[in-house]
Amino acid sequence: MQWAILSGIEGNLAAYEAVLTDIKRQRQPVTDLYILGDLVGLQGDSEAVVRRVRSPQPGEPMPQVCTGWWEEQCFSLHGIRGLPDAPELVERYGLEAVKDLWEAVSRQTVQWLADLDFGFHELDCLLIHGSTVSYGDELTPETPPIQLCDRLIRADANTLFCGRSGLAFECWVEPGALRSTVTTLDQTAVPQEQGQEPKKSPRRIVGVGNVGRQGYQPSYVLYNPGTDQVSFKCVQYGPARGFGAARSKK
Amino acid sequence: MKLAVISCIHGNYEALNAVLSDIDAHKADQIYCLGDLVGYGPQPNAVVELVRSLDIPTCQGCWDEDIVEGLNACDCSYPSQLAEKRGHLAHEWTNQAIHPEVREYLASLPMTLRQDNLCFVHGSPNSQHEYLLPTMDGFAALERVLAAEADVLFCGHTHIPYLRELENGTLSVKVQQPGQSETQHQFTAPLKRIINAGSVGEPRHGRPNATYVLYDTDSTQVTLREVPYDYQKTCAAIIEQGLPPIFAWRLARGMEFAERAEDAGHVCER
Image 1 (cartoon, each protein chain N blue to C red):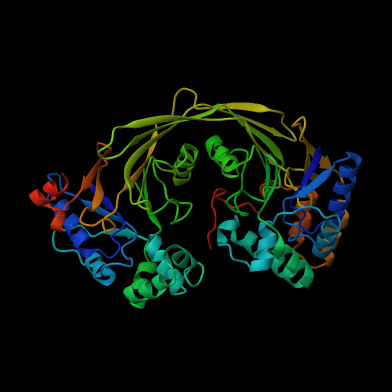
Image 2: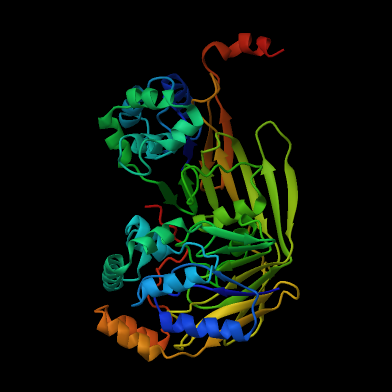
């Protein structure tokens, strides 16, 4: 069993095709494909990406897709849920983005997106765009450790795969000691030590990178539930690929 | 400076009067209120008028929010369909009973209040609907205090008062990123406290007495207070006003675990 987990296609069909090609090249076949939101975006062809995701070719796994930040902006614009008129979108990308996103994603596609899950609990993993706090919760290696720890506790999972930041990272969080003393009306000061032996295993947050945001360098992760190993994949395609790309980096 | 912190009055004027007398007897310098002035109880207007007349800094509770915004939480807020139905009846009754200026006042309440290193919220810094239970994972509880950028976080919502001290918290984080060498860092948290003020008007600690807390900012001493009052008067008013009789029944017993959501950590985003 091997999972491919990706996020942030953002309408970039060529980048998604490049990732699919890379997935098919893996020596150990990919059995499950998870897309952690942001199929659509302002650039590229969001409708074509959604069509491609919904219609895998023979031999490709059927993607399991959850909603992301861009999908939530569509729901807001179309009055399906959340605050009306996409205030987050306007704040971040300006008023022009409202028109662009409205034109980029049809009502029919938005309705299909609205039926997607918020995230997936699979084995001891949670796969989600942001976190259980919000689709907009952006977890990175710079996020305060206590916040990372909290998100793992809330996730009720040993591994939290997320895509909001677009970064590729693996962050192991190990709670150490903590003394908690509770006093109630009927019970005075009962100290409890958390983190004593046997210690809990560290848990982790994995950023799965992004497919469509960076030109010609989509990234995603492979996860083997049997070995619990995460591998980061960075694919090169288009003009940046090959000998020319290597030369241009010098 | 001696602070008195009250919460969850829930339209119970008798209980509020008794608690204010107790606060007066303890010579508190300042009172803070953590919201839920209305809901369940029979005197929402009188409670709000009294709190306003005393200029008590107050943050917005979940019931106050629901009266302003309309019922918008999902069924996660209730332990059963029966409880949800009763909650809706209480909401409708309160919605009809409150005066326009009371509704305006509830709408104007802030989510959070601050004084120096103290932060005051109804449920948690994240939401008026989140329950900070004393059994919550210590690191998750610590995160709520740190998120509030405070040393002491006052909350209500559970209707059971407690003091929780969190100390010597340590965490280690190991980060791996493609193309970069592994980094590792340690996190250590100083002493943080969560003080739950209990409930003035709808206690659930197993006795009908009203509860609140006193906090001395100089000595950092916390006193959980339990105040007897004529709860039967409120019970009679609940029945007279046509509110669900079960509210009177549980008020007379200080029922534990009544009307608490099954998943206490759930934050409804609807």
